[in-house]
Image (cartoon, rainbow over all chains, first blue to last red; front, side, top):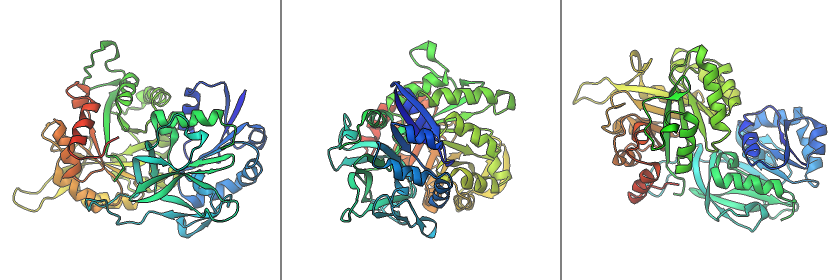
Length: 218
Length: 256
């Protein structure tokens, strides 16, 4: 039995992720929980997040998810989604600056207002909708997903990993809005995405399916 | 720019059935919002909007059940609107599997509701729906005002200022319907859409008046919106979503 935990620290809507995983109809035992025992016993973890980072970090610490993630980071496959990905970095400039989990060197930065596309039209923030993800590396999580496939995004901040430092995560995917930003990160048994695989139709379901069978090695 | 402009089919539902008529070849599926949603999703719709037009308390359970059914089979964003009055209504819809809720009348009655909702659930899931009607005389500067109760009740609120205020309060997206154009098939009110879209930072979905595929193109290029919503052209089988996307692509619009 493949024990999958979607970590629930009280922020946002985790039902979409749960429904997508159940739809994949694998032999999984799914829990949406903050229960430390279930998280420790899980074979793989999904770490989602929505909303503002300050509230997220507060709840992550209150539910002691920071400690559990630190334990799990070398032990089992972890998939970070959206603000879950952002929380893995050292620091976010959202909410006038918030310290994050620091699993990887790098920061979280906001899209500037007043950006324009090539026609001179103003680009909206949040970056919302279907955008292309260029696969910057080969990775088991990209199995059966075409390069430059579109995924569904909704976010105003994005991660800027510092890939030169020790213990850094690698850029696994990149997206343009209008400048290139990191839309997927990979580090040993952690894979993190800025987009929402659970809302990205076939490509998203494929990515979740890949996660369910991933051994945590790249 | 690689971010695709979105096409959003809208399902107006009453007592758990799609109304405004749906004419697919497979008659057995007609009117079942789950089947309709699945089909639109397979055809490449970028999101689904589900508007509950009964919105009475007795039918709430039906709506929640339908949203659950759609959300367990359709893996693209789902917005639910109609009768969203309390934080509890929002929680109920999100728990049922909706990704966003559309708030209309309740935002006008109590604007702070939008603020509370955005703080509690995040701006990404709060869509403010605006029904606007042109109130200026011809040959004068255009002015639009907000109407509620399906366009019957005037509020005196000026549309651009209202949209700005709603964004300030935390709306993550604006669903903008022209009451003048809704149901006319004459195309979106492009001046209205452009005025609002250029005044606010968040995405705008144009709604009301689509009669042909050029109208979708005009909404994007002239109305400057980020997404186009349509119901009848898709429901009645006049055009399919792949046709709409192909047409938009031929006219230089980035689609998925």
